[in-house]
Length: 161
Image (cartoon, rainbow, N blue to C red; front, top):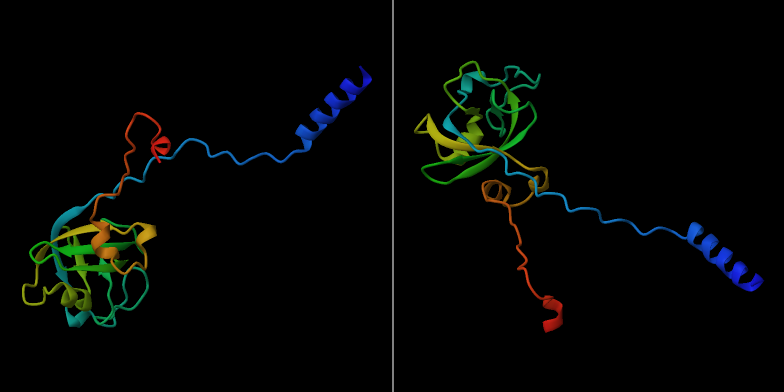
């Protein structure tokens, strides 16, 4: 009886001192796809070169940046020209004085979108998710729906292997 009691107390002490395994918990939902904002885009003229932006930086027409009232300062956004599907990632560093447009781009961003001759063009704008920052194809991927893998219900698929 004493040995059984000793064994039981050892077992309880062992369980109390044992490391717990990390819990996987419940799966978190996939992040929601950021909302795409559609509208007109224009670009700064060269006359604004060197002026201070709302962020305190100096505007440079040869640097990719943008102004918007719809996204927080410092946000990276993907801008896609609707008619050509050209795309560029810009950082919001200024606010706009007018409300009729979605975004005002730097001249360099406008060149990359091929909109210099048009002046004003239709665009889609979406904030860039953190996981795409620095990705080679970030701009195109920002407009794609998130990938969701669906596992069929039914018998355990590992038994078939």
